[in-house]
Image (cartoon, rainbow, N blue to C red; front, side, top):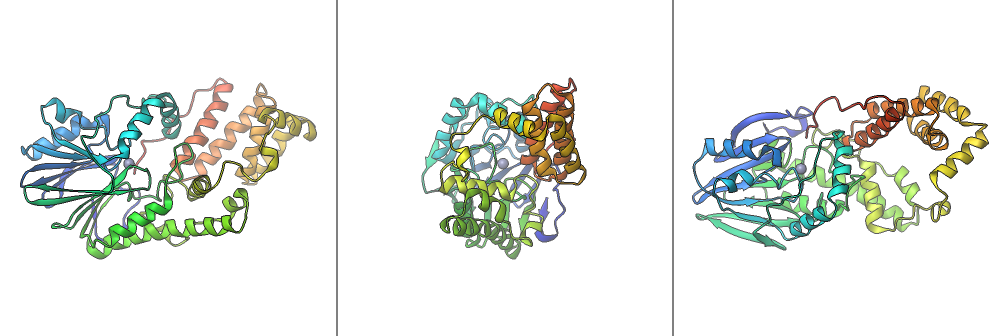
Length: 414
Ligand SMILES: [Zn+2]
């Protein structure tokens, strides 16, 4: 799981690899998320304990590798795939300091408030109705605002706060070894900072953090997901390319906002850098660059989309019935939609599918059209965040037709 030539790495990275020593004194456990254990003169440092369901597997891998006591565990951020795998260590009687940026505590409180919502979001996002969002937390015991320096048996460990995928992010820097743990500030896909169903994310601050990390001149980069990167130039390239990818989008959005363009016009106009977008570590396999545009519009502006009719609108159903009546009936909407679908205009065809099924939800022909539109949209996008929503829409239509839902082909890889 190490690459020295990230620009030629295979995509996607292997889903799971057996736990192994990936760098001197460093164990890697990979199961969707990467968990690392570092051997220091004063016991172990665990970076991102991982998913609740893998807690046992992480514990057993670490204990098969080293008997040294667990001194510190750090959450690079409070997401479910990073901060919920510590339980087996605690059950075994270990009492590590649990380090996190201070906003991680607020995140866990919000997770309590919005537990039902997070179940819905994650089930839709991953196409898995069995997902249950965790309700129990292993709270940080040592938090910091800007940075924290720890000595583990004479080995200096630095924790630096950042914003990016979340507001509670941090990266870990071990200067003597030149080891950099980035959390999800590097995750081997286009930065996940546009997610359509989740809270605010921070593209410009994400780029700031990447540039700060690039200035460290690390020899090793240990990401939250995907390949470990080895070699000073390789590490710098991954960090600065990712920062540039974000800057290109941020600058376009800001320029257009300041010029008075509408959110709608900005959404359609802004594109990522076409060369950077093909890099193996920047492919839009998870989030989508257009969603980053939306997220920036939300960050800097209000929720109004620039269309005055949408300020205090009629219901979607009332609009759809009006459109269907103008078209001469739902059958005409479906017939026209089918022609658009055949011609490959999937975006426009999807609007017609929504109008048809909202005007006449009981019309099987309309539901079949909707099902077929979203099956095609699902197939046509590489971005998991878009796939999840398209799959849910397709399955809504299948349910209306009495058909079984269609699950994803395989597990998600990052
Ligand atoms: Zn993650």
